[in-house]
Amino acid sequence: MIPTLEDMVRITGLRVDGQAVTGVTYTSYQELAERLLGLAVTREKLSLISRTGLQASLGVASACHEIGESQANYMTRMTEDARAALAEEEGAAADRDLRRFLILVIGKLILGTRGDPVSCRCLPLLEDLSSVGSYAWGAALLAHLYDSLGTSSRVTGVAGFFPLLQVWAYHHLPSLGRGEPRRAGAVPLLRRWRFRQDEQSLRR
Image (cartoon, rainbow, N blue to C red; front, side):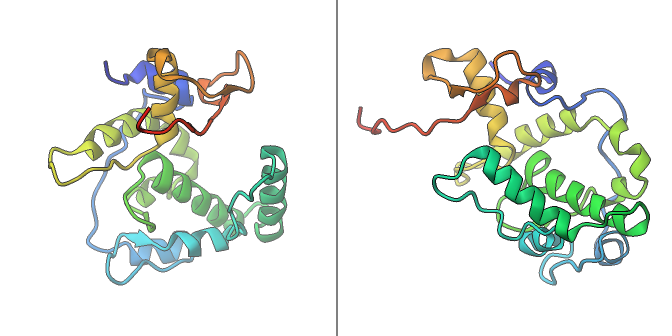
């Protein structure tokens, strides 16, 4: 059993039909990152952007969930912080902020990589914001998940959007346990549960 394209749609709500998430790979994304995001790429890797710098530009540098803080309070705090930093009027500044947000979501969730920096390989696809919704991001997420599993015995982790695998297991492997129900009947399915930490010891 493996996650399928149908699972991508049901769990995340991302589309699996449409334009392929593909394009030209550049040796350096410096010019593109400066023009579209107003940010610089790291010197060591010319396709990566600092995650903390990207979050700071969106006003969510302190994006940590505090102990004992409810999800609603956490989201309210994040929203207030972001509103104070983001452009309020439509135009070039608002487009830049939207691209920063999209590259953070794509680079850390959909096509996440190991480590802290955010990849900007998909930045060329964000140049025309009106076409971003026409791409098959769900299919790209599934392909990236399979690709990140790798074949090397030295690699013990995977990169990608782990809540997808959690919810997939909730549906297909219920004997492993499920998170706490939050919104019965919510679609996409990812919104139905609050993840629960397993407190059973590995020995048991």
